[in-house]
Amino acid sequence: MTLPDPLKLIEAVPLAMLVVDGAARVVLANDPARALFGDGILGRPFVTVLRHPAINEAVENILEGRAHSRDRQQARINAQGRMLSVAATVTPLPLNGGQGAAIAFEDRSGIEQADAMRRDFVANVSHELRTPLTALAGFIETLRGAARDDPSARERFLDIMQREAGRMNRLIGDLLSLSRVEAEERSRPAESVDLAALLRNVVATLSQGADAAGVRIAFETPPQGVLVAGDSDQLVQVFHNLIENAVKYGGSGGVVTLTIESIAHEPVLRGPAWAITVADRGEGIEAQHLPRLTERFYRVDGHRSRERGGTGLGLAIAKHIVNRHRGRLRIESEKGKGSRFTVALPVLDPPASK
Ligand SMILES: Nc1ncnc2c1ncn2[C@@H]1O[C@H](COP(=O)(O)OP(=O)(O)OP(=O)(O)O)[C@@H](O)[C@H]1O
Ligand SMILES: [Mg+2]
Image (cartoon, rainbow, N blue to C red):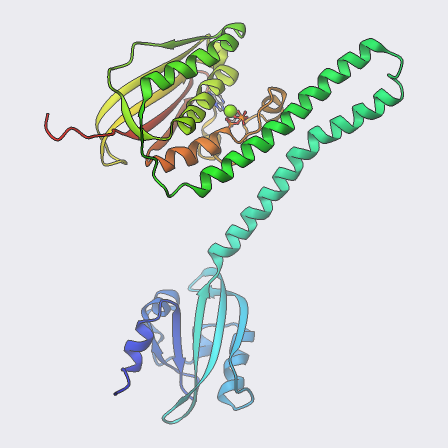
């Protein structure tokens, strides 16, 4: 067996990888390494390629015979002006003319970002749970003390306590629902769902509350045979939240309109789609909030949302569900004019000929 060409060998490695000779000059570099440090690194002294004291020292220790085993370090490096978190591994590599070293870089930026998101999420959940819990604990204390012999205050406090407990319950339900939807995001739902019927049911469920708030939900006769491949419970969740939001936050316009439209070619879905739009004529949402609305716990007006029992998870859940259905969620809004939330879903059976 002949050994493979060393350059071919490191080109086969998906990590950025360099080899330096005994004089600490770069003698081999694969594609990812050139992408990281620039095309002209071959032949250059390693210290001019990467100025990172700890990694440079590890290389020197190996080249000068002070270290004989692999050294691995977490480092923040400057790669052509871009700051990256990497794990750098420096390994002794005997070369023809003496001791060399191989240096591999594993980009950890994505992992660190995911860690930061997880920490934020835990902090947010704890905060959201603590708020109602603090209220509950406070009222228990009041009921034991000052309000002990005041039946009307007792009733009032028990009402609030019930509402706060209900809110905690909803939050936990939403969190479970979010993690379930995320877990199955890659499995495409296969049930055939009649969207028009599904939307009629959602409207029926919500219209009583809307009426009480003085909002009419207008759902003009939808086209026939609006079929998608879907998970009906999840789609109910999406439209329930969109319509509920439109009534809750956009209800000042008095009417929420629901439309189903057939789209011959949806550019992002690259095919025919059904577009379901929930439009309100309320206050609208300022542009800077739009890209963040589907983040977990993001609210334009946190106080108002909480007051109305919102958890701030509805749109995050909706977005994951729509993704699972290979659809897209588009949000448009103009301050003072109202908002439009459009869900586009691929049609079940694209007609072969028309
Ligand atoms: N139609 C709308 N008009 C104005 N603001 C809206 C509209 N829909 C959503 N929002 C804003 O987006 C935020 C996030 O909505 P989302 O549905 O994710 O959470 P929520 O309604 O506060 O809580 P939940 O849906 O869990 O009850 C809302 O708090 C509100 O500020
Ligand atoms: Mg909502």
